[in-house]
Image (cartoon, rainbow over all chains, first blue to last red; front, top):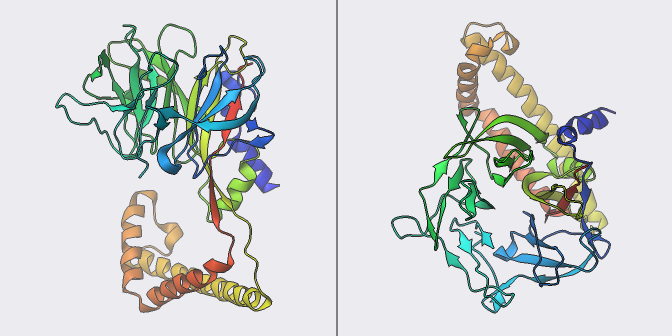
Length: 96
Length: 293
């Protein structure tokens, strides 16, 4: 009971910004979960098909994943991912 | 696309005009050297001064949050430390997202922090960005000793540590939604133990509990001693204004107490022996969506 009260106290603030309760995004019915954490999301049309894809930076190897949007901009569906490439190779930034 | 990095440099991935990206270039400061603000630099791009070029908002590991004007052709202005309500902004492992959330023509900011907090602040028009009216979107998570188990429950309801926000229209309804990436520590699968190992783990757990009880008892005694040295009956009687001096006195007594130091060493030793029998900590990073209603 005490823990339930504590959780409730952690889950307020967004309502006053008119935001719905959060959900974890999935790809192929699994939670998107990047290696060594520190997920940093971004939306952009990466493959030029006119639909917004999901890009997620991660700590491990300083890489970013590109989740292609297989459906529409109104109901995005993600399945697998490819690594973000630049200059013809897998792009990385220094990660410590 | 622009990315920060753990080591500090900021990388620009320019489009190649054919749908791909060129090899990254690092942004240089006015001295021609790599622009490095700190470690764990987290970037958001948005055009503050409406000159058609996206400017940089950068969070850092040690707290300061910066605005860097984009002067075009890979040239940038001097980093300016940002403030909110007249105070310099500080967010450990900060993750900013600058966006005109309230549609008033001035960029606002979401800012994530190491402890799980995510705040929103309104932009104040001006040549240099500043903000006001700090609003908590996500409260900080409690500091507890069994953090992994706490997070295992919290992760069902909200992002956990080091939230990194991004604002974009996720479902194409014309309204800005909030996406948040996080850093979540969860217990991994428990190791398969032989009966002998399980017994050893249980014995060590009993030792650990006993040592912790002993340490707690001794700490209370040393707190009483420290309070008495300062002229108070007990630790509870020390007024708030004297707490810093009290903590210093207590630390001195603890440092000089052979029994206290022996207990600390024993607890560390038992903890280290028990570690291989415990579930490992796994690092996760989930992506959360808050749809704008």
